[in-house]
Length: 305
Image (cartoon, rainbow, N blue to C red; front, side):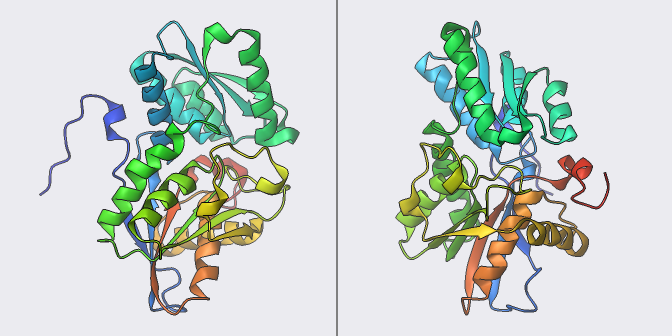
């Protein structure tokens, strides 16, 4: 039996997540292989552990982050959980600006790690949180280390050096299409850049909500949002707008048929994978399941509130 490695601390367990075969669409599209990176295997439970660790360690290397400063950023939840976990493990104070309507589970997880939350207007979404954190930092810049996940090149670099390399190894380079949702856009940008360097023929599809009023936590409707500085539209062969309810339906379907309890954005990824599968004869499609559905139970995603 293969033994799990010994880790010096929990941050060393970030990355190297499993690539799972997803068979939800096998009957309709038997020649399309679908795989998903199971990012809830990260210690903080989401893909955001990768970017948060990269940004914090980049700050340490540059001398911008020292133990007399507080890590602060805006987040809809998962990056905040990652900051809180890593801050706890490394001995940093963490303060997070979150929209007031993020799920109760996300709020509880952040506070469990000892981080402080400042709530922004729920109606302004992630953009309102961005504006608020900028104001807080501007009022006392020496007090804070502000990674700014929407602008920090260490965010996509974490996926360029990690996620994409893992996908190439796990598929033995057979991947033909990559599908991922966009929020900060770091996962899509970093992974797509590395994949296209490996083979320009790999097609990349970015998935966003179909409009600004949506229920897909963690994703941004880029045409009506503050566009992240790290976003590089040249890396997307296509950008598709996903409706909310079909994404929910697919999240529920994969939970009930394959035991994969995933979040809203994973449902959106599945919606795009199904649409893609209907346009190609065959291929090896890889997507990212950013987190588990257990942090969305209170939202009604799985039928309970």
